[in-house]
Amino acid sequence: MAEPPLTEQTQQSEGGDKQSSPADEDAKSTKSGPKSQGGSKPTSRAGSAGSHKSGKSQGSKRGREFVQTPTGSAKDNPAADWRNMRRIIAEDPEWSLATVPLLTELSVKHIVENFENNSEILTDLLPKHQNKVLEKISPSLPLKVTANLVQDEDYWKRCCKARWEICDVSAYGESWKRMYFEKHLQEIIEHFVPETTDPTKLTETLALSANYIKKIDINQLLPPVREAPKGPDFDEASDAGSDIGEEPECDHFNFTPVLKALPNLEELHLTYGVKDCGMNFEWNLFQFTARDCLQLAECVAKCKTLKVFKLHRSKVDEDKVRVLISHILDHPSLIELDLSHNLIGDRGARAVGKFLNNHSQLVRLNLCDNQIKAAGAQAIAHALTKNTTLQFLNLRLNRLGDDGGQAICRSLLKNTTLREVNVGSNDMAEPTAAILSQVVMQNNTVKSIDLSCNRLGPDGGKQLQEGMEENTTITQMDLRLTECGQESEYCINQILHRNQEQEREANIRDMEAHTPKMKKIAQPQAAHRYKSSAIIRVA
Image (cartoon, rainbow, N blue to C red; front, side):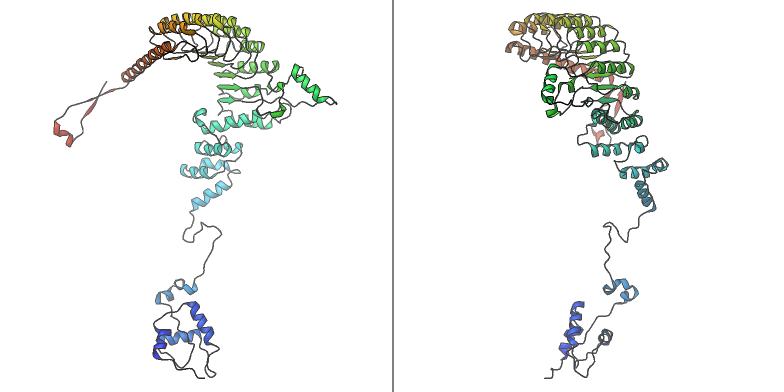
């Protein structure tokens, strides 16, 4: 059956007014081909475009395509025609055809990628280019490349945070580079096993970091590995030997080459023991041997720049402390000595007293948690009467008793430099409080006294109260668990508060005396609308 002829309205709706999408045009072209009459030839895309341009519709033939021709701008710029455009997907998501990297950026990128092999070029760059390179280089570069070349604190900050979760730079003089080298050396020493670990890494690290290390803080020292004895009853023999202390002594890390290689070392904190030993616990892991003591004493005596020496929780007994003190008697720069949490008795306390008498520069002395009794306290008290440098003394958790406590208090009647004294938990009672009441009336130097955990009793509290009523310098006094009575404690606290306010006002006056005063000149009332009030400095 013959198809009905196309009307003019149909022709206009198909090709004149309404533009079809490329997909619809292709679909129409496909459908129009097989349904065309036998005598008619299928028109090409160019032919249909030409018919559309001429505006003449051929209604007798079905399936003609009407394609819109490109505009004038599309002819001039082929890329403007959507039919000629292609979609480009770059491998680099930041790549853009419109952005071409600058030559300086390409150069910086190349320097960063090859920094390990050509690091000396950093000194030849401009400052702005140096900053770009330092922001991009890896924090895992070898120390032999960056140790003496990179001084940028931001780079060392990235190195520290990439290696350790907790980074408290305030404990390292606000220097990230110093923090990195000190913690790096600390890890090497703490995991060093004598006679087993290769010292090459330690030697290289010391050579690179010698100028940046001021403090060594060691929390564990490993003993050498012992071969397990062979035999059927090994477990029983090992337990028995450990209990009675018959196992051979083990020497630990030797600090002599380390301290010799560090010219700026000021602080040395040591603990002879093992952390997290778990089920492998043995007493010899925490044994500070005689050889360890002798080696340490010799290297500390040779380190003339050392200012702070701490040896705590290391089972240092009387004989070993005498060896230590004998080597550091004439040390020129040591100002702080910490031997807390050890086994020092009266003989060791006498050695410490001799150190205080021997023209030492010591400012802080910490003998907390030892075994010092009355005789040792009397030796230290005798030294305090002659010493003119010590300002902080800590004898907490010893066994001074009333005899030792009274000796220390009497020494404060003559001493004029001590500012803080801690004699808490020393089994002192009311007789010590009676002598101390005289001290607080006559001594004008002491600022803080800790008497906690001593049974001074109500009478001792009243005597302290009477002495404190005439005192104007003590601002802190710890009376917890002293059984002094609530009334005495309240009165003493009120006096302490008064002294604190007086000290605060005195500090304000000192600040005002050292700062220039400001004085305003009065002006007419309307002058402030146009000019600020004049301020002059008065010398």
